[in-house]
Image (tube, rainbow, N blue to C red; front, top):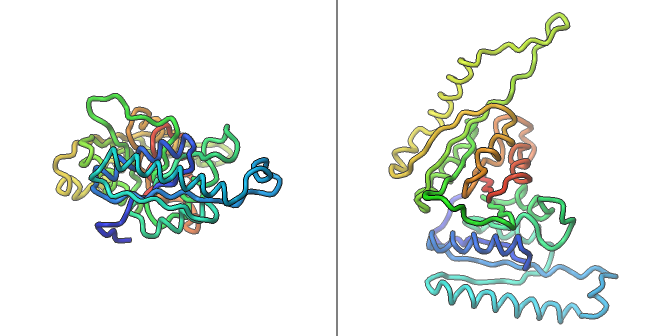
Amino acid sequence: MSLKKLDPIVVGYDGSGGSRAALRWATAQAVGQLSPLRIVEVSEPIPIGYPSADSVSATEVRHLQERGLDALTDSIRLQHPELSVVSVLVDGSAASSLIDESIHARLSVLGTRGHGGWTDVLLGSVANQVSMHSAGTVVVVPAASRPRLQDRPTIVVGVDGSKTSAKAIDFAFAQAEARRARVVVVNVTPHPAPTFTGGLGLLVFDPVDIANEDRLLVSESLAGTETDYPDVEFDVRLMSGHPAQALVLAAEDAELLVVGSRGRDGFASLLLGSVSLSVLHHAKCPVAIVR
């Protein structure tokens, strides 16, 4: 999907801690990219029997939402007068509305959790659905996410040689160039499965060969990147183990973790790979899912 210069950064907002963190992230991104910011709040029907449904009419609820959204938008305009910012209150389902908004978005941003659901579940159903079905790149921001106190911020990107991995590399380096950050390029080799011969489980692999293959894969994946982003410093880290766990560990102190929506393995019919989904559930920093 080609991006037009005026495509906005779309952020989902519902007043929750997660959406406020997402709004901070999206606003900083819009200011840095000189991109319009579009704040989307969804007015969902009040379920029958819900406590507020008996005491407050749907019209009153919507009026309160509109006033709050207008005040929020005015506040952002005062802080960033150079920023083009609009807000909309739409009717419908939060997930489907944000997915529709993603069609014309430069980037979609939302928090890991909104007001609904169980508080002990790390990734809410809306973030889950939007990450799976969005038309473009999605950034999911944890509620507790704050800028890391580092001399130079770090952006981690997972590389596995897939098409979406190549797009993730470009996104990560573009982010690093804009933020004056360094990039850590991570390739993870899963622990090899045993080959059973005569009832015995044998691990048939050569660690040296695997390391050489991984270095070659990363080198090929980064071909042209140094030319496109000559001022961005990067390191390569070869890791082994469970890919999602290794990426979360590598991004423990990162400003952003970037992964492709699908890797080389798995079923092509799945909309979001198991590694990407697991990273969303466990990463402590914002996660970009790139398509």
